[in-house]
Length: 566
Image (cartoon, rainbow, N blue to C red; front, top):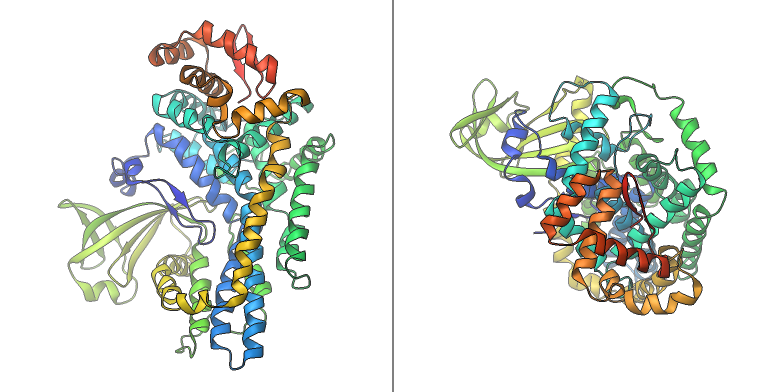
């Protein structure tokens, strides 16, 4: 089972194989995830973090509005009104899905950068939400120490974990993927684009642009862009003109961040924002530019997007139409956008003065009960769900029955006035099946809306543009006279094709890249080569010759070891 984060619901599903060995102790606050979980966590948490951003939220809300408008078209009292609502549905869905397609390689590139290259530095006053959790996990629940101690330990554990066989194989798999976005999900194209950008920033100021500062500013540039949010929600232009405008805007944004002035501009912006953050003390105070609680930003975007669809989302009345019910369910689901699911465990619960959770005959947790639901169930089977409030910085344990949220608690505890918001967020996590039922029941009618046929054409046109958008930046340093040859080799097989279909060369490139990003010194790297059965000097000589010829990667060797830009 793959790890997945859905862009619209922002629900994350981690493979049980990644969590089942340690989730029980983590839920009971007696253990923490193993170090080998850190890179995988950073990947999915970066997706989750980006999708709770203003841009990510706007995209999700547009998709929801499109689905609601499609149901409203089915419910329309006249053919004229039906046609009008169909067009509104297509416009909303097209904007959401075209934006998602445009940014898909970038989103994957950022997540892969977090997995393979991101490390914490004690000098950075601000830290990404995923990395703050990574530092906490790496310290295995120890009492929070100084920033130097916490980040140093996280750096060490990340470095050694990234040189594991598992991580080497994951990096090899990435490097051997197609470079063409036509033949893949854009993983390699997006990763090389992000790495080219980091290389560009390091040329401007190699001392300042550590990986954590860099990723934070890339996130800020693309996902906290108020102009793009306004463009997404603007009702004036219509497709295909609105979609062309979006594409041109995104391409211009991408082009500018690679320009000579972007690095210094983003550096100045970082320093200005960081000046308000304490220079010492716990990482919990190191917030990014926007509020760490995405609830308020979501409410504003929701109101802007749904202002023409009047439904009282706080009402408990029985709704007359499916579109009204779907609107309320979507609103409820989005209350939990900051909750990242880590996993769940079957349990039994006993209601007495509170609620006791039993797993394998052992008492794990005790909760105060909320309302009468838990008391009414007595001793029964239930599910213990474990979440992270990714931006809020809390672990959330929730007990769910067949149809009820029975109890919940957080570590550290919430203030009383915050519990109501958390309750709504947890309830919102449970409405996905209701939403799917409504969509499934009406799927035939929705698919029968003639205007929706345009949507697939718009998406196809966007996918056709992705190579033209990302290739110039993924291959930024390749000489023009080598581009055609290199593209022919990498289009379908990535570095596996470029390196003569030599799996050992791909493995060596993966090891050098992982060692470079983690700043691991010689002995550990030598051990990785021995474990892989590869002669390091021969591999280094070959890779340096390919780097000199094609410039798609930069490899240097000096006293402290070998540095690789891929």
